[in-house]
Amino acid sequence: MDKMNNTYFPDNKYYEAQPTWYLIDAKNKNVGRIATAIARILIGKNKSSYTPYINTKNHVIITNSKYVIMSSGDEKIYFRNSRRPGGLKKESFNQLKLRLPNRIIEHAVKGMLPKNRLGRILFNNLKVYSGDYHPHSAQTPIEYKLDKIK
Image (cartoon, rainbow, N blue to C red; front, side):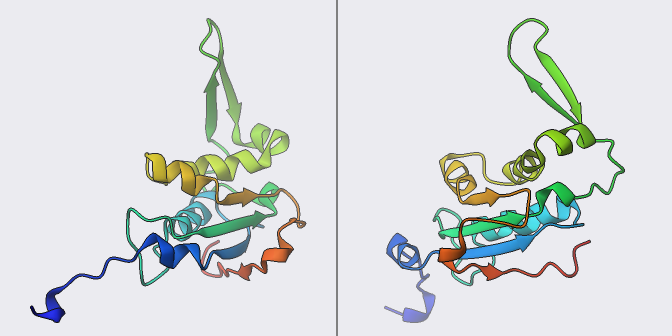
């Protein structure tokens, strides 16, 4: 049997031993561009051993979510529905930014994750905070630079 033609498939045991925590500062960053970077980290595409069906145990901490910006000018409208008659609520980007600034990044990242069981598990690895403080300093997160992203 030729060993050069065998494909390597990593086990879940490989990822369970080494969870990685990343810290991203979202101050004055574009929502869509930062969300794509977060989704790539959560899915595991930043590692050389990327496998689509395995949870890579990457955790992402976002700080300063209340300072994010929208490139299209604040024209974004967020909808939610209570599924009752007259239950449709509309909220602009600026209104949601004042009320729940974390929800903006969570909504953008959730739309970029897979729509299956793994996507729901990966979404739980995202922690978003509106200020500078986060309670995850014991995990020693790696600061992830987004210099090219504005």
